[in-house]
Amino acid sequence: MQDQNTAATPTTTAGRSVLVTGGNRGIGLAIAQSFLAAGDKVAITYRSGEVPEGMLGVRADVTSSEEIDTAFREVEEAHGPVEVLVANAGITRDTLLLRMSEEDFTDVIDTNLTGSFRVIKRASRGMLRLRKGRVILISSVTGLYGSPGQINYSASKAGLVGIARSLTRELGSRGITANVVAPGFINTDMTAALPEETQKNYLSSIPAGRFAEATEVANVVRWVASDEAAYISGAVIPVDGGLGMGH
Ligand code: NDP
Image 1: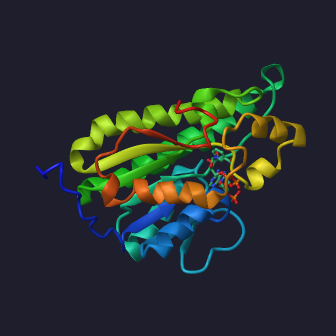
Image 2 (image 1 turned 90 degrees about the vertical axis):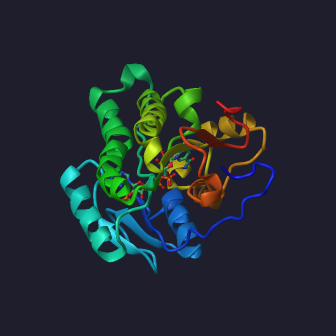
C-alpha cells in the first residue's frame, strides 16, 4: 500500500481509447475536446452535424443496441477497446405532470437512462478484458434536487446514480470505476431552449450567481477519469455552483 503521507506522482493517462456519446455539441463536445487536448484517442457518437477535427465520429443513436454495437466495433478497430466511457447523450421533454404523456416519459427514459445502460453494457466487455476502465455518467442537479416540469428527466438522471453505484459494486474489483457528474445550469442548446422566466428563476437560486460553461464540466470529467481519481467510485460529483448543495 502506498504511504498515505506521500503525494502520489500522477502517472500518465494519455493515449487511452475514449468514447463520448453525443460528443458533437454542447457538454459532450467540450468533454471530447478536453480528452483530445490531454493526448487521448477520442471517438464520439453523433447523429447529426459534423465530426469535430481530430476525433473519430461514429454514427449511433443510443436508443438502438445494434447501432451502438456497430459504433463500438468501429472504435475498437481504430483505437482499441474503450477504456473511458462518457455516457453524455441526453434529451428533455419538459412539461407538467398532468400534461406529460406516457411517451414524453418513456422517450426520455429510453435515451437518458436505458441509452446509458446500453453503452455501459457494451463497453464493459472490453473493460473487463483490459481489467481497467472509467465510466462517467452525465446526470443533472435535477436528478436528486427535483424540478417541476421534469418528472421524466429527473427520474432518468436519478436512475444514473443507481447504475453507477451498482456498477461499482459489480465491477469495482476489476479496476473499473463508475461515477456520476451532475451539472447544474450550463450554457448549451439545451438550456438556451428554456423560457427566459425559467432561466431567471434558476439564476436567482444559484449561489455562484452565474451559469457555467461546458468546459467547466469537461474539466471535472477529465479529472475523474485520471489516475489521480482512481479511488473514487460510486460518487455523485456536482458541478452546479452550489445549486444542489451537495445532494
Ligand atoms: P445538447 O442538447 O446541447 O446536446 C445533447 C447531445 O445528446 C447531442 O450531442 C445529441 O446529439 C445527443 N443525443 C440526444 N439524443 C440522442 C440519442 N438518442 N442518441 C445519440 N445521441 C443523442 O445538451 P447538453 O450538451 O446541454 O447536455 C449534455 C448532457 O448533459 C445531457 O445528458 C444533459 O441532460 C446533461 N445536462 C445538461 C445540463 C445543461 O445545463 N445544459 C445540466 C445538467 C445536465 P444530436 O446532435 O445528434 O441531437
